[in-house]
Amino acid sequence: MPSTAHVPVMVTEAMEALNAHPGGWYVDCTLGAGGHARALLERIQPNGRLLAIDADPEAIENARQSLAAYCESVVLAQGNFGELGRICRDQGFEQTDGMLFDLGISSMQLDTAERGFSFQREAPLDMRFDSSTGPSAAEIVNSYSEQELARILWEFGEERYSRQIAHRIVQQRPILSTLRLAHIVQQVLGSRRGRIHPATRTFMALRIAVNRELDNLKLALDQAVSLLKAGGRLVVISYHSLEDRIVKQFMRAQAAEHAFLLTTRKVIRPTALECSSNPRSRSARLRVAERLA
Image (cartoon, rainbow, N blue to C red):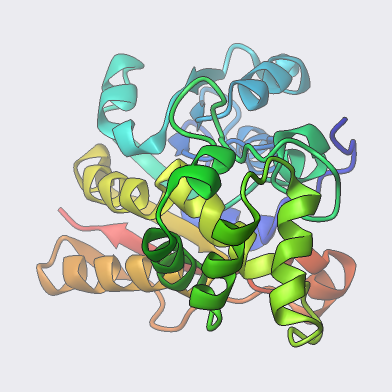
C-alpha cells in the first residue's frame, strides 16, 4: 500500500514561480499524489480551474477522493503528457496561465511495492506508469540484447558499468523480480556506490526506458508553448541531469527565439531545511520561463 504521508517537493517555490493567483487556469502535468495540485487549488480560488494529468490510473482514482473538496475547480485526466496538446484541447484548456511538471517517479508509486519501482522490496519487475500499455521492465530485461541493455543503462542511467551489468543480466536470465535484479547488479558493483544503492542507476534507466520519459518530456515541452497565454509560466522540477539538460536547453532555445523570457538565469534548488526534512528533494532542480506575446 502507498504511504499516506506525502510531501510535495519545492511546493512554495513552484507556486511562486507559477505566479498562481485567484481565477487563473493552470495545468498540473504530473498529478502524482496530488500535493502540488492541492496547493494550486488553494491559491486559485475563487473561480480558478486546474487540469490535473497523470499517466497512472491509480493517481487519478486517488485524486478523486483526496481532491473531492475541489471537485468543481479541478478536471482529472488520465494520459501521458506526451499528448499534452490533445488532452488540453479535449478539456478546454487551450490557453492557460501556467503549467507545472514535477518529473520522475512519484512518492506514491515508489511506496507501492507491487508496482516494481523499488529495488528494496520484492515485487514483479514492472515499472510502468500505466500497467495497461507498453512493455514492462521484465520484458525489456529478459528480451533485449546485451548491447541494447548496455545502451539503456549508459544512456538513461549514466551507469559507468553498463556493459558489465548487461552481461551479467543476460547470463542470469530470466529475471522476474525487483530484488533478484538488484542482487544481480550488486554482484557486479559490490559496494562501489558509496551512499547510494548499487542498483539505483539501473532501476532509474529501466524506468525511463519503460515509460519513454525523455521522449515524452521533449514532446510535452514543445506542445506547452502554444498552450500558454502571454505571461503564462512554465515551471519544471527535475531530479537528474538528463531531464534537467533537456529542460534547460529547451528554455534557452525558446528564449533565443523570443518565445519565452527566462525569469531566473540560475536553477532554483530546495532549501537546506527541505532537504533535511524531505530527503527525496535533495536532487531537485526547478526552472521557470514566462511566455512572451
